Structures are given as C-alpha cells and as structure tokens.
Amino acid sequence: MTYLTPTVTVHALSFVERIVTDFFDNRKKRLAEQQTVYSLGSLDGSILKDIAISRSEINSVVYNYSGDRKRRFVR
Image (cartoon, rainbow, N blue to C red):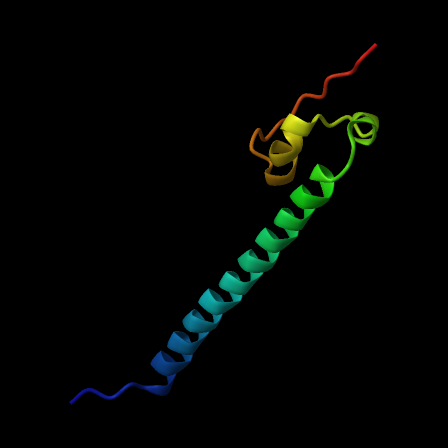
C-alpha cells in the first residue's frame, strides 16, 4: 500500500486551488465582458460614433479579436 507524503498532498492541494481560482477568475472576466457587450449594444449610434466604435465592432473591441484594431476617422 502506498501512502501520500505531506509534500505530495500539499502540492496536490496547491494544484487544485490554482485550477479552482483560474476557473472563477475566468468566469468573472467573461461575465464582465458580456456586461460590457450588453452595455455598448444598448447605446445609440451617435454615442458609439463619438467613442469611435461602430456597432459591428463591439465584440471585436470587447473580446480583442483583432489584436491591433485600426480606428477609422470620419472627416
């Protein structure tokens, strides 16, 4: 029969703690992103134009799909 030593148990608990912490951190981030998408989506077109975001760019801006977004400036 094999017994766990205290160091193995501590490392296992640390590993599980990291997994649980990462899960809840990612969940909190996703909920904040969803709320931001909802909030930006509820703005009218003139306000979005003032902050230089078109309605079609909301998800890209929030989730940073493009990585390096180029802004369009209307003259």
